[in-house]
Image (cartoon, rainbow, N blue to C red; front, side):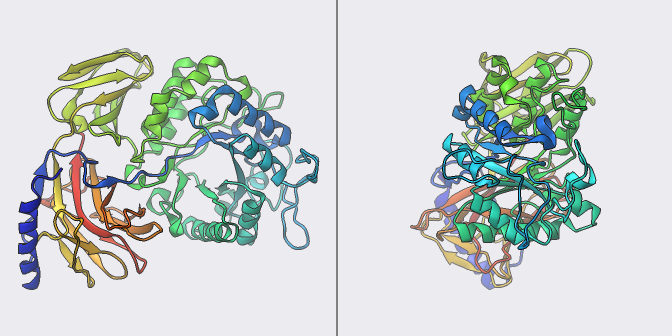
Length: 575
């Protein structure tokens, strides 16, 4: 609870007087207190988690068909993956060979996608969707942003397939996907890249087509952007064109498909590529409130990786809060591999309600790295001790570097289940090319709060203080249109998390933007809070900026209606 409420209310009243005199800003008004980022009376609003599932490309390339999909869906259900939370069965490239009818509708090969039960017709993709849904799973589909997709410009198996993209048919195709019943669509970039299209423009147009399809069918279609990190999608893809959740690729493929009994059966996944994609996927400032960096489908369980590398691969994707889309043939994974994929602590780290990405908090040389992910439970962190080197190393962890109070904390090794502490610190010997994944439970360090009603907060573009009975300060600032709120905060010189306490009494989420000095603005989703005007909070990460006495965090909303901001709190980790 905020025991300093009366003091803040007095400051707020003083701020109103300052506002009337022109709101001159000379200093920062802040309150520092030892309270959790998710403490009452503010209600934490959970983010939609990253998708969990399977994708056909890595193991089947463009040889995909109905029988393969049914076997993989059944394996997901029978293996325990579904029970653990995996949901998506995603059909990648090769499902469609580029044919359309006279009206421009997609035509698929009937033999490839036959009727599966009485009353169905051959060549109808809703057949396979019904089967997937009958198992309690979700179905995903694939297309390209260009007129001709990857199956034309760089086919993996078989001859080039022309016209396999959706350019010129966005509204028609995405409506068709939704009508077939698909729940997820991955949009590749081969055609867009060859045509020198602007990814922001094209994917915004695609997002609007997805929105139209959802409204016409009342069916959700999750958007997966796959432009391989071109034009820095983490700067424009979060909530592109108003979507309420999406993922975007941050790099190229980890591996070319390894298809059994084919010319490419001898290919092997390389662990170096796993590490490279992990590195390229770290953009925590863009990942929050249901938007996620995607370092590619997992190569877990595929030829080329050993047991240790599979476990580290899973740890890397979990600490980065990445989509867990398995590319291996699920029918061939061992019981031990399935146990790794379904480890409840690891999945909880990946699926945490804050929806944040881990950040690097310490690095010793170029090989020994400590990564930390802030979790929703008060005083809880996921920590990865990663040894990229060629020799075993002793790695230590201090609580202050992960934003915990310098007292004691307890530790659990996620993979072994062994528990330690409480203790004032932790250390572990980490083998070469290995990692230790930990859950740490302690006490949050102090946070610093900045009220919207403080004299150091600038209100621009017509923004003004409004009365708020549910707000500890008694006031809030509404965003929307030209209204803008600028919080002056202590200099942001390390990775910093910002909790935003807000109100949104509307029935639908609203979107606002946060811009920090020297960085591109990011879209933040603000879901509805209590209808009675109660407060909710969401949390985002802000990257360090050039040195200075103070930093400025600017909130705005491009739409007419935005959230009402009551306060923000900052919380720093790292050294």
